[in-house]
Length: 165
Image (cartoon, rainbow, N blue to C red):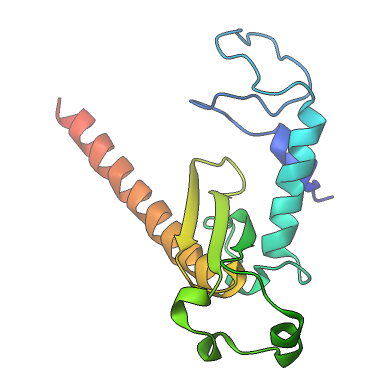
């Protein structure tokens, strides 16, 4: 039976993280890092919600997901309103291209990945980009693919240089 996402979070092998996602201390754990929060269940809830936002059909950034678990990430879109929208403007339901550039909303996206054993976090801000799901999340998708691939290359180079010593 496949583990649910909360159980996967509990299985993380954290090497240099500041927090421990497990619910209980394991034998041999040290108190080197203190949790940054009081209730780990709350953090797990947020992580699961971020996963759903990116990887489930009803999520705001679903179209930017990567199905390959090697690159799979979790994130949340955001939009920062630049100016007050009048009732008349709202009824017009204008396309972003019909709105003057300086009046367009800012697009935001925050994410971490890979989802299992996360190593990277990123924040994408697109000034006057419109919605986070259409402007910022697609950039995050490209970044995660590049970041993970480059990480693998760095590890190969590091291992090769260690063998030469």
